[in-house]
Amino acid sequence: QAQLVESGGGFVPAGGSLTLSCAASGSIASINGMGWYRQAPGKQRELVAATTAGGESFYGDSVKGRFTISRDNAKNTVWLQMDSLKAEDTAIYYCNAHIKTSSGTTSYWGQGTQVTVSS
Image (cartoon, rainbow, N blue to C red; front, top):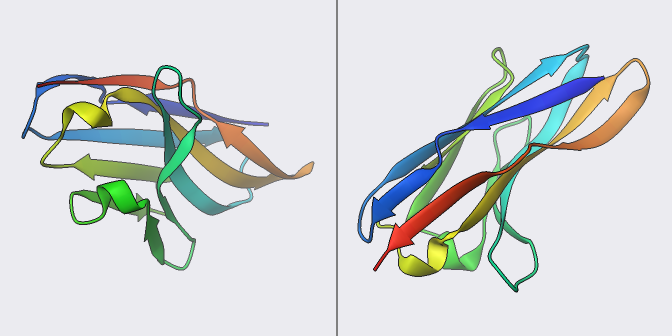
């Protein structure tokens, strides 16, 4: 079994920055993709950014050029640096990771962290 613990959400004015972090722990053999999703009230959960174990990164169109995903494989941790935040970035942000344990590979989700951007 594994767990994901997120931190770093909060309240920030438009144009500001926040950094989210997500650390995986447990009986981890390896981690493949890691990423961040978000869900705003009344909307579907959407991909924000993701990174592969090999270091490739992918971004949702709405955050390209403003958000940066990074990862430390040795620490099983992924970060999301969010700059030039807009009111429409307000959402609950969820960490996701595809983790291989002795039971196989499973998609894990963090508990979510609220990001609120004031306009």
